[in-house]
Image (tube, rainbow, N blue to C red; front, top):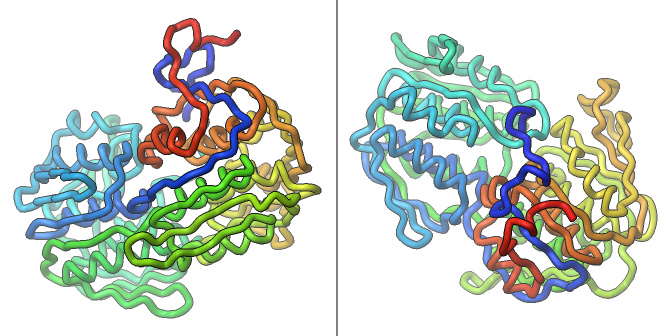
Length: 463
C-alpha cells in the first residue's frame, strides 16, 4: 500500500470493515480450493495455447477476477462455471493502454503476460504494477530476462511497451535469488522461444512444479534437473490444457494457525500433507496437533490445540522446501501464545514485519531487529532492515482497531482479533483479504466466529 492510497480507520469506508468479537475458539470445517499462487499463472499460460483450456478448483477470489479482466481485454473468451474456468484464446488481440490501465495498481500479474503476448502478437504493454507492500519486488529482473530473450523494452509515461521484432530466442540465465516471479517469467517466455533455455537457481515451489505440469500438458518440453536447474526446449506451438489446480497450502496453514491461536479445532478439507511437510513440522514443534486424512475425495488435515501450553521455537523463512514466507505471519500470531521466547527470521522479503505494530497495540510482546537472529546469515543482514522478530509469550491479546497493510498480514490480524478479548474492528478486509481467501466471512461464521459488518456509519469510526 503506497503513501498515496493509504487509508486509516478514520477514513476507511464502513463497508470495508469487519467487526470481530474475540475469545471464541474456532471449531468446524473449511474447504480450500486451488492455490492463488498457481491459478493466476495458469490463467496466463492459457494465452499460449491455440485451443481452449479448462482449469478446475478455481477459488472465488479477487485475483482471479483481475486476471479474467486482463485476459478478456486481450480477446480471450473466459467463462466460469462453479469452480471450473473455461478460457478460449483463439482470438487473442492487442488491448489499448486505457483498457489495460483499468487493472493497473491492482495486481502484478500483467508483467507475466509479456512473454505469451510477445509470442502471440509480437508486442505487449505493462501498466504500473500494484500488490502488497512487503518489500522490494522490482520488475527490473523481469525486464532484464525479457531483453535477453530478444524483447525490446521502451518505457514511457503510461507504462512499459515491449516488442519482439526478431522473435524470442532461448537463453542461459541464472537468478541471483530463486524468485518465484522470475522463474514464472522465464518459463512462460521460454516454452515457445527458439532454441533451448537453461535457468539456474530457479524456484521449485509446488506451484512452480504445477505450472510446469500445465505447460507440459500443452506440449512444452521442460526438464527439471537437480540443483535448481530447469531446461526448456522451445516448441513452435502449444495447445490448450485441462488441469485441476493444486490446493492452496497458504490458506490451509492460515486456518491451522487460527485453530492454534484461538485454542480451537479446524478440519481443512483439501489440504495435502506433501506440500505442507515443513509447516506441519513447525506446527507440531509449537505444540499443535494434526491428523491427516488422505482419502482422495474427503481428504484433508484436521488441526487443533491439544490444551497443553504452546512451546517457543526459533524459525526462519526460506524458499521451498524451507518455511514459506507466506506462512510467517499467521505463525507469529500463534507464537504470541507460546510460553517463552520465539524467534522468526525473515530471509525472503526485507519488509514483512510491518504488521507486528498492530499486534503490539493488542498486547503482543514483539521486538524487531536488523540482525540475522535465525542462526543463518541472509542477504538482508547488515543492511538495516528489520527482518528478525523476537516474540515473548504468552501474551494476553486485547481488542483494537486494526488497519490491514497487505494480504497475508491481514488474515493474521483477523486471527489476532479472534484470539483477543473484546471487540475489534478490522479495516481493509475487502481490499486485501478477498485477494486470496475465498468466502472467508462465510467460512469464519461456519467455524463459530462472532463477526459482523457495520450496520450504520457510526460503527465505522473510532469510539
